Length: 128
Image (cartoon, rainbow, N blue to C red; front, side):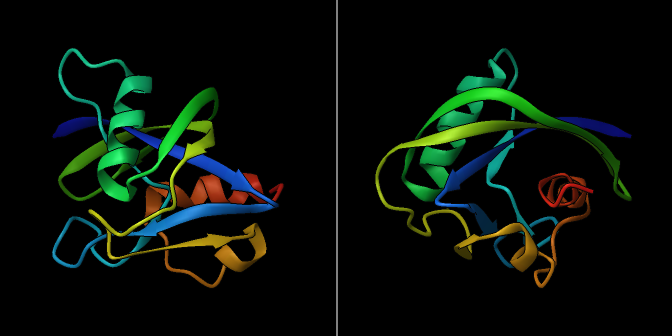
């Protein structure tokens, strides 16, 4: 089984958090997630997150502390998800490499279908 190290940004703005919808046809397509992506060989996780957020949403972030680490096993892979608190440094989100994006508060997130690895992050934001 393949093991992937993936980063995710927990970006807060006025009590809401940035969530993104995965592209149709991708792994977990059309499900919602905290944006980020796979760490490339030799890449620092924080640098990965900055790169991925720019590529997916065309915004700049500053990476802060780890918020949550999740290990989730899908059918064909294990994902180690490193979730970092981030602050928006510049830009307005655009759908560059995602289906859609939204600012949502944790209670609203319960109405979205999240990728399974992201559900523990939603629960933590809800204080569960």
